[in-house]
Length: 112
Image (cartoon, rainbow, N blue to C red; front, side):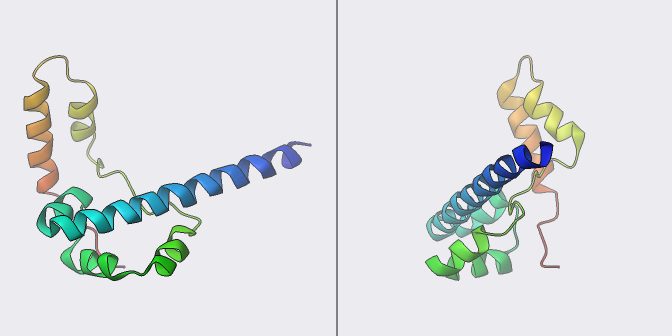
């Protein structure tokens, strides 16, 4: 009985992953077309990845978005950065600036 109930839930999750992936890819392309250096920083990708993303056709975007994994990932591998962004009591602007500086020092994603 549990497996029967899990199948529709699993399908819903997979559908939401596809939607999130497609939205991410379309936003990434738009950001790269508008301002590539800023997009590279904000997306946390290399120039090579940005060049590849901006060249994808709509059919390729849909195919890539249909992957069974999330194409985005948290850039907050460091708990200090995540803590600054979520647990600021005062000095929000300062916390945002400090976290941006720390994230700028992180390496970009590489093609594996």
